[in-house]
Image (cartoon, rainbow, N blue to C red; front, side, top):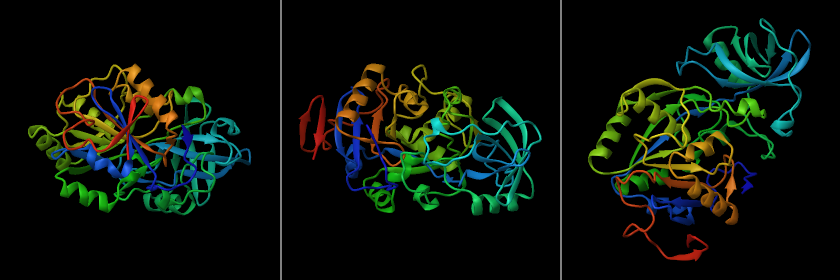
Amino acid sequence: MRAAHRPQQRPRDARLLVVDEAGRMRDAPRARLIECLQRGDLLVANDAATLPASLHGVHVRSGAPIEVRLAGRRSLRVDDVHRFSAIVFGAGDHRTRTEERAAPPALRRGDLLRLGPLHARVLRMLDHPRLIELRFDGSADDIWAGIARHGKPIQYAHLRDPLALWDVWTRVAALPVAFEPPSAGFMLDWSLLHALRRHGIGFATLTHAAGLSSTGDPALDARLPFDEPYHLPAATVRAIEITRRTGGRVVAVGTTVTRALEHAAARAGGTPRAGDGVADQRIGASTRLRVVDALLSGTHEPGSSHHELLRAFVPAEVLARADAALAALGYRTHEFGDSVLIRDMRTQRAAAFVGTPGNEGPAARVGSVESAH
């Protein structure tokens, strides 16, 4: 796959690879998403807005430059904004590959960090020289204002130009709690939401503090995803219950939604309950999905935690074929890339996406992947 270099959320040429529960694959324009869904299905999206979570400043004791990338906090409460976990780097910015960024100055408990208008102290090291817990000084209002004025969206070297905050907010963005964008939701716009309603397809949201996708360090990347708080509204739980009763499918828009819904279901014995939680589980090949029937997501590179989550939906052989198809067809990866729609192959609650009567569309064979035009 090739990296998406431009921060364009809905390019006209965006593609969608559809994998049904039989392992069949179909390449289609992403604009034809609705043709891959059925009346009675429910899309659930993450409505978290993205924080400008990259803060540049100075390590006061040494005078050395430092970048702090906020990576986690204990809850979604707006007044609970003093303590964060964070990944730290030395001098440099996003133009250098994360894996090649300079190490931060040697940090120890009590060190003061001056981050623009904000002051923060290192509370403790978290078993790695680049992973810390810090505490901001000042009131919650002061901290929010300082992050808003001084912070920048976290970004990586595959994007040439600096990101603006509006580049990383989805159309349904609400509470600013995500550290990186819940980018599967970039495909959403108001015309799509209206079309879903016209076709009898439901839409609901939850709020999940989407975390970092990469730290640049293999040992830290192996810990991803970090623990992430979420809020599951009662209205979304009711929508899921109705979808289940009527034989529809729950389609998670993004890995964060999958993680939140499956965590809420696991802790409640199988049926998700409304309320707050902290997703601390890993989802992978050994996970039994309880709620999510299909995943609508960006494309993910093998070896990443996001890619590992896909193994909960399909066997390794099917995932390998999907990866090969994405590469052969020139799909774009990373947050502004193309998309996949993957059905859980281990359940048979509903009909397949591909080959569903009325949804076939004209197609031409491309290897083992149908290509819709």
